[in-house]
Amino acid sequence: MLKKALTAAFPHTVPILAGFLFLGISYGVYMNVSGFPFIYPCLMALTIFGGSLEFVAVTMLLGSFAPLQTLILTLMIQARHIFYGISMLEKYKGTGFKKLYLIFGMCDESFSINYTAEPPADVDKGWFMFFVTLLNQLYWVMGATLGGILGSFIPFDTAGLEFVMTALFVVIFLEQWLKEKKHYTALIGVLSSAICLLIFGADSFLLPTMACILCALTVFRRPIEKAGV
Image (cartoon, rainbow, N blue to C red; front, side, top):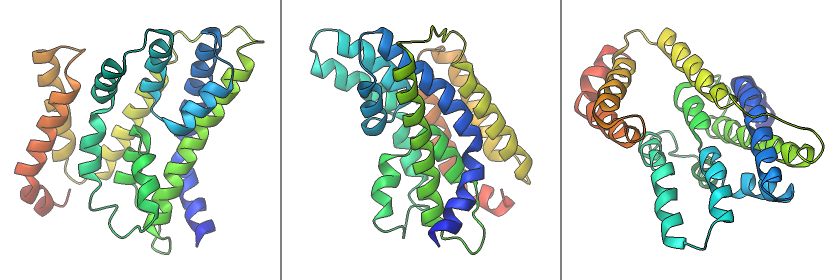
């Protein structure tokens, strides 16, 4: 059962492997040039597992001791996971002890895969989601550790690598668009993002966008379900 779930989960995570290795290496190098040995990016990837937060954490570690400011900044950066968690309530039901790790390890990429992908009929859905989450974290830990080790020996220019994950999300969006019979949910996401971007600007539109999407999906839940999206 476990082998089947792992085999089914791995192909879905291959695009994440490419993105996480590149970004993880750049993060490890960044930690190294900031004065931290390789064990720091390794442990932070294992315990924090939040890419953007880990990059910001470097500055926080080098700055003055400000726990309240750190808490608020962390909540602001990771607040989108509140909406991810609400969306996954039904999918995580019946997963038993695996639910604890699924909650801890839910990143943007794992959420995208676990929310949209359907495992084969003979594969346990809980174990499928577990291995998707585990593999994605392992990719990030591998990249961060490798970057931390190689940072001392190889000059590495990280400029532009952040676009890798943007491109990845575009691919995931297009794949989901092709799977849908109707595109109500995708259009809600695109329109909400565009409107909030115009109103709040690029630095502050994420949380309002998430709130708008949640409200819209709640209001139009029944029509969307009837349409078979």
